[in-house]
Length: 246
Image (tube, rainbow, N blue to C red; front, top):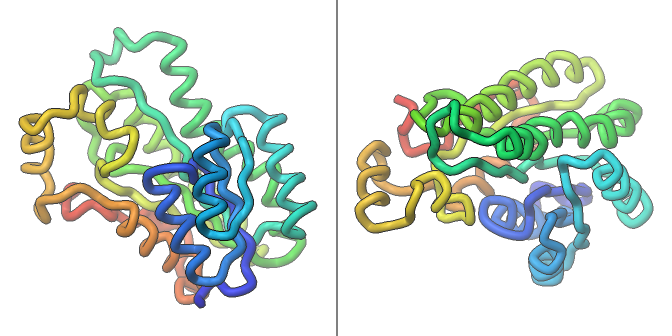
């Protein structure tokens, strides 16, 4: 019960890593708002864990503000925020990615961190406590060809994590990032270009531990960073990647 009495929001919590994190946070005692652009998926996870569901487009200011207001009204505030929602573009030469795809990647992966901070950080600062976990990627640390703008968005998230950590430390708010390698999530096919046994084998050959990141892997790491066990850890980008970045 390492998160007993804590109130959390997990974005992109309706599937993949986000669902795994939401389940683990709830099992450890947190009251969890599962936020997802897919309201049905959010509701399914929320019902499973006894949490709350919210439809949220994390790239939209009004949508994020509505999510924050509901969290305040129903949970009385937010102690923990996991910025997990993310998208990518298909493997494509950098100059061929459309402007619409570029804008979508940066709205969901980058602007969302600004929007959730704008909506939730003031109350954390006033309370003198809080923890934020941003789900970045090994792509932001060790970029791969043809995922250029996705790589760049995750590199932005790592830098945002570090600068947020420095600014918010005097207020008792910690900010850390997780950097998973690809996992069994809805984004896997987009990373691979096509989800075939051959493409999986080729990708797995680049991971020393020989497997993808799982929702459980990310949930365990997020739990640690969000808990008081990590009270002296802020501004880190923790690789949960089976050695991919070595």
